[in-house]
Length: 216
Picture 1: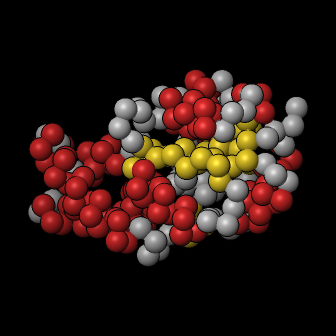
Picture 2: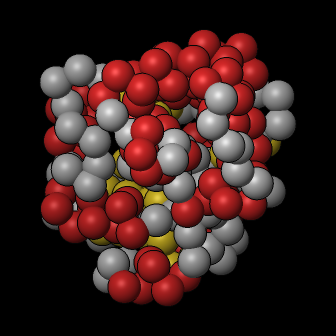
Picture 3: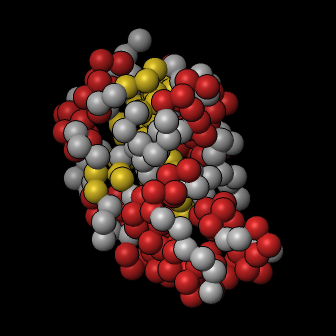
């Protein structure tokens, strides 16, 4: 069965965003007087949305709703200004998107990152490609692995589920695809280890972006 829509996760899949995410979280911690974290610790802290990232960055005794909300606002104020400082597309991603666009395959992004930042990053790095849907976390839609954001993407770009590939770097993404009843593709170049993809029953695991073309 040929595929006509590829839905991508953003962070850890299309873009290596970890340094800007970590720097923004650390800036929020500094402003509030809490310890910061080495950037190397952030790959295991991201993936479930900004609120969960902030909760994980804060000391356990400081994870009350007021402090989390304050830190989240400080994170977003900084990240909005610095989200493109160190972020880069993964090697081979732009060539993949060019080929998918050449083949008239529709592209979508569904991310747990808040909508404003997702739109900003896609516009900055990928404006010339064939993205039909760009969705981040927004009011009324739960974060992945709840599949609601995938269903929203399919409503915006109507496609039989059998014609869809869902591509991501984490167990959250693989679980999202499973719950949405679409075929999942785990990527090894992102933030999470291969064992997490396998434990989440990824339908496919690829090591290079171009490997996706063989699944179409």
